[in-house]
Length: 413
Length: 225
Image 1 (cartoon, rainbow over the protein chains, first blue to last red):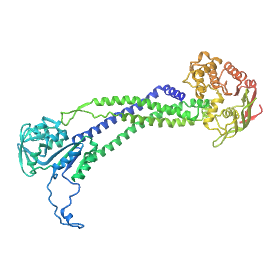
Image 2: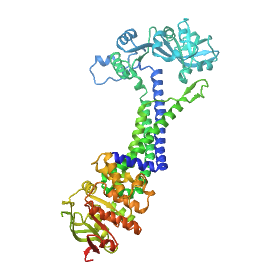
Image 3: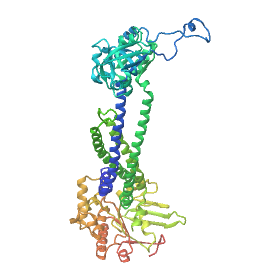
Image 4: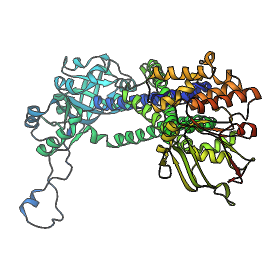
């Protein structure tokens, strides 16, 4: 085997320039595949991280997946009841204290309750529609990243005064209000209450920065005239992947819709899978092109070395030896290209990780390209390259092995 | 004198629209230490017969025994192994591997067979090349040698695994008179002093006359010279 390796090495070194071109072809394929995978995986990871960080892992709302059974259905054993006027249930999670105590007893994470009500924020004659969210600041800190998103004031100032409100910076600019100004919040029932702006946040999500306002839970309950009501329980888990199990158990016990973040973003996650399929298809296509380069050089070598093949066969080399010889040459080019491709890929990924740019929409955030450093990308790219090289080398190798030495010797003489 | 090569009704027909008969019903027997010439006009099947005897080609019909073993049932691997251990080839053109040095060219069959250690292979290659007057050329590449020198390297390579049979296809055909004489002398020495069996295809009737026996072919058949 060592002899075959030496002959293979001599062949590929003997064709320096062509070998170099083939190796570079593989290297560029491997390098760019790694860079592309790092960029796409990085983008995906960043996106999922954003989802996981900004959203609760499990959200329990006062909705139900199926309409609740009406008392008449329980009393009368009939197939169907028509003309029934459903009982008017009070909105909100019934007995939230018990629900929260139960959840805090077993959920491996943090739980926060809130009351979300639709209303209008009014200031100097301007109205902006908003979700007015009543929160318990201590609990909220554990489930929401908004605490770290303040550009003026802070989340802690919500507790500093009785009627403080925190709004998004975009809403503030639409209202023309600033920190310390007093605004009016009007609920859907028409009740209004004045609040002092104690903080401006910027999450980067326009819908939130423009349409969310945070007040103390008690204030929200007063504003919406729903004493002690809670219509939203959010859970942040130590392990986000445990969310479906937690949601299932909570829903089974409480009867309210409990949605895991995976369920809430199902279509996005499906789109990411499709994106991955596209990415790896492109990577495979790049490696296929590199494989053609290898096929070309191994075919050229076998063509030019036809006389040597005849000589070696006349000396006593078998067809299997010839197949191995040219297969090794293809794989050696693939391996050398993979190694250089790794270096190129690493350099490209490093360079991409250094790129910083300003987000045009806000003009205030400097960000880097999301990059995933994964050895799996290197292994996959090299695996594709070696497989392509093996196929590209095998086809001419098989042809070389079948060459009849007599035909070549006759041709030479 | 035991028989090394025994052919019976050896026939080789090239399949084509009009099949071409290269060798027809050749029966021959060659023993140890024989120096045999294969002669005949161009296209008479001399080289084709040699390729059949050297297991480079397979007969369409007939039987061939080498060292007493029937080669008919041998698969490609066994035929290659038999070539490696039992047969040495010298072609009209030297057919050396151009990327390897003279010594490496001689070592390659030994390395393939794997009977000797690397140092023994090196020593044997050196000894063979020196005995053929190539002492100062061991580390040269084939393109740095003259035609006669290359052919002597080819002879050394054919002897690398100490095969009992050497087959030479017009070994002097591309050489000048002086080099031809040198190569012929070497082949003769192989028979007389190294106890090899040499079968050489040649056009040179004077050379053939100096050999032990002559097999004359006409149109693929053995004929009277």
